[in-house]
Length: 112
Length: 112
Image 1 (cartoon, each protein chain N blue to C red):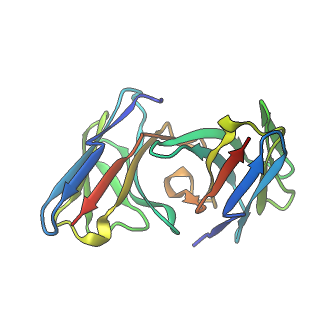
Image 2 (cartoon, chains in turn yellow, red):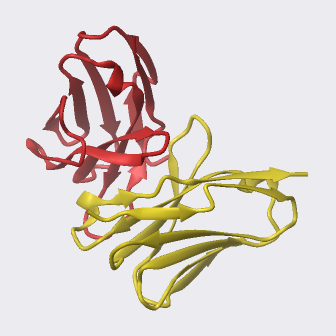
């Protein structure tokens, strides 16, 4: 089965600083989904990547999928308190969205 | 919020008792999923449904059953709850294909 490893597991960043979260797969990624979760709430969909080398941005968050389609990164520019939460990556390893695998998450804390 | 309601939001039950969690959607999406989220394990798929009365097992289906008699409702039943089933349960929906999953706000279940 596919395994997704996220790094780091937790991150404490000063407000205004940039940061990167990584998601690495043991298998080729046919679809990579980034979600954000706030404590006690559900997951909010951020972005989806499918093609090798693809890059998408939304506001100050940029996600990339490497050419080999085994690693994705999520980059936040000029972090704000609203960025705090848990970021999870989910992957389709070729079996469709019925069998998505999720990483264990990266807990992001923003300090003033 | 993608029109997904989970009930109850919190439940405490005793070992050996039956428990049913409900997921209700107003989006008319074909696919519905039940995940559990545990520290160190991330999100793991329990069961999913690809249509009324059409369901399949996920990664951690032992001890759980599901039913979908209407498009909008997907029920998760623990026939005889055990302490290992203490978890946060999330329902998700999607239209299928490579479309992203949209999650409910979760049900926190404690089995004592």
